[in-house]
Image (cartoon, rainbow, N blue to C red):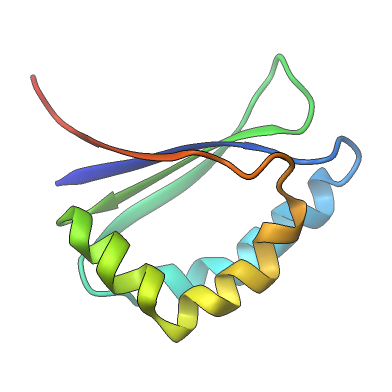
Length: 96
């Protein structure tokens, strides 16, 4: 299992719009090969900051699968306009 992690910064004041767009976008990722689960967490200390965690079977399921799909284009259209700056996305594997 691989964990995709991204810290997301959006314009303060647009949280409700972003969260609604994320709800609309969620089915686009859940249907992908290798998808296990995802969650979006809102930061308590900093307005407009979120943590996205997605579990995939392999890195390739995310990078070569989802990111190359038509669903990703829809995901981008719904969510990417909110990000400033664009997030760094990293992949992690469990050690312990």
